[in-house]
Length: 191
Image 1: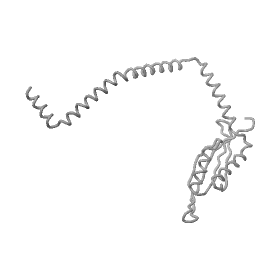
Image 2: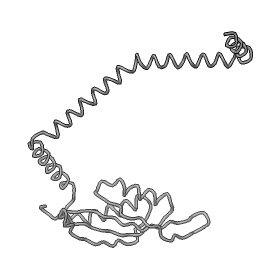
Image 3: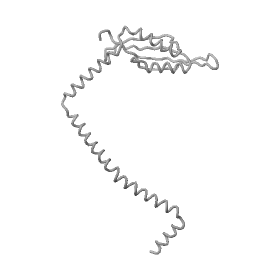
Image 4: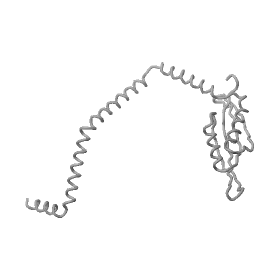
């Protein structure tokens, strides 16, 4: 017993600050563990109960009759009809080209020429226009134009943007050239 007392006395005299810090940390660990058991354990159990309840609801929903499938199918048909209403008719293609030139003009760019290839998409019977055009300008204007394309109110898919050789008009004015491939959809009248 005197050996233990001698060791504790030596530790206290030589490492008083460290011993106090270790005791404080032990007390903090004990208080934290107690707080966790008394404060958070009931909430954790409630969350586990909610999880089990939700899992049971999902299982019951999976076993629900086919009536919900019919309702879901009707809802999907309605949503598809609304989607098709937002796709413009084929005759509005020239309006779209005007908008495209207008977006380029808003960004301070000029579209060199547009080539397009219309094809009927067999999956949804829509007219798919693949467009390709070239623009050149400084980085800020190009970025603005791409932003206008991305947030256009039309259904546009930017399929590819390729960097093409630019030109340096002066030491301070470097141009960037882009070739942009877009896809947009139109429907036949009455579709």
